[in-house]
Length: 241
Image (cartoon, rainbow, N blue to C red; front, side, top):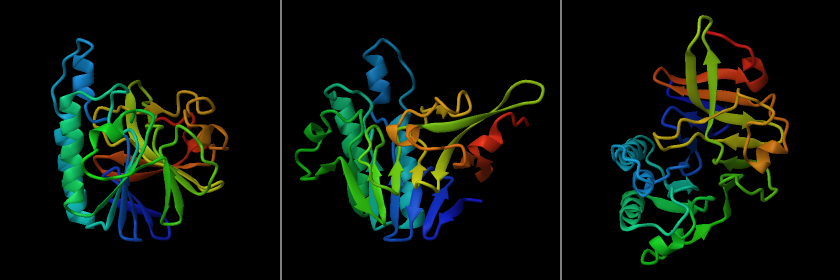
């Protein structure tokens, strides 16, 4: 199954994007562009595949859903510091590709220091939060207090243990119907995910989730088999394959 409708007109998808029928509007977050160059500045070298993978995935999303609006929900860039040339080029490559197809909306994340300095020539505003499709959309590192809300920031995942060792770790969407919170998974292929099963009462990073009862939040795993209904966070405690 490629998508599941979790609310009327709201779908979670195996492409790690949230899709609203209104528009349509596509929401992704936590791209962390410039990840490799930031690591190289610290003496660590890995293949430069983050931006290429993100570009290819976004192209597929644009072709499949033909959105009217495309929201980048924060942590668009990785490095907290002033971006080097490579990072600026990567950010502009992704932004220009989306802007050629539809309206692009930028929401600031906690990694997006100096993002406005990267895009001075495109005359775009970077929002702290924005109201679209009946939801407040914000990155999640701060809480504007409005609900329902869509956030990123958490990099949510769950690890399900195997009965004889090992197991599987899945990035996931998190939907807490009351008080109205949707958490989207990271879009960067380098983000392994924050394991919510490690200590489900302490694992959440966002003040939005920390202040809510997330035990009955519904989880939807992203896998090679498609989008999977995993049940609630409390259902998964102690679950083995």
